[in-house]
Length: 419
Image 1: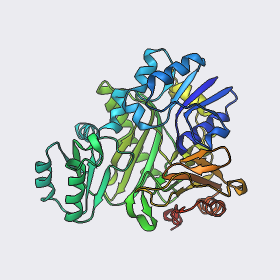
Image 2: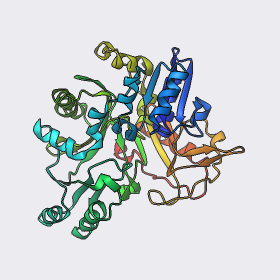
Image 3: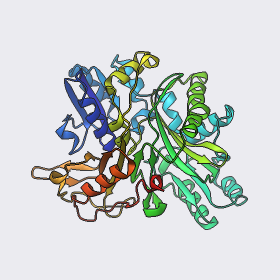
Image 4: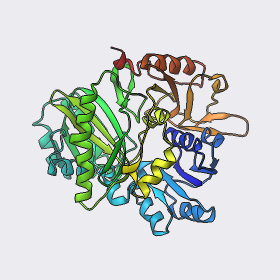
């Protein structure tokens, strides 16, 4: 089979790495790809939002499957566009991708179907939002309604911080149109947990649970990022809690989407908080997580292509999906200044010395002579081992061999699992 993966990050590198293992795959393309992906697939200079060019490429190159990686094209309707041209494509249609594209939609859906989530109110009017905010207790969570590259969620510890966040989102429009509406919701405390699931309508096949580290600095300090590292499985969280989250949140949400006439087909990402009252929903994403994909797919023993084809063809319920009992830990190496502004084009050294870990490129580019940085999150180093401790040790030992100017990373990824 000839496959086109759309995207350019660490998630897409991990997807291509997994697809490359399938004996059914004869040719892999990635649009636009990155410096690391270029070693596994032919990179095509077409951007994720160029639907017409992507579909024409798929037709011209007799592509058998298009796998959509990132959120933006899904929310903009790339799957509907491909389906209209009879191109086989994996990902949710636009009317289902709204589960990530609008936080107001998702909160209202959860409320309607009594699915556990934080208490909230949503607003289109800044003055009304401000008046409501000033009656709430701190800390509090303020979310831009639309997509904001993983940065549209602000946890405010004080009223001053909350006022600033609300003003930036709704008045100064730092996230553009995404801030036309906001959700103000109660702060949930507890352990965060991510569960990605292959979904086809009512059929939900969960992957092993993972835990992301969103804040840029150790001990969950500093601003939110797209994710500074992750690990799977979660030995310190009882399997009964994971099962409760699947049965009370993920499966009911998939069913709710079907009832709403928005059946979800693709990978549904549940961001969850394990509170004293049980698991509650923080958010849903309409695609694989980044960097969660970089620890979950290395644990997958079943052919990823077989699972995707089963979901597309309505046979997901018949799939025997097997997972390794190993552990995986991914540490992200980021550019100096990230998640604020950062330089690009800095030489990356030492990757040829990494022997005992997987390297997933997130923000890299290949020049004529060398690999250089080309994003905020540059690399994800994934260590594998019999335990989280062993996987973590490998990830950090191998990361220590890599260098680029300004490189920074968290030193406490997966520490919560070692307590």
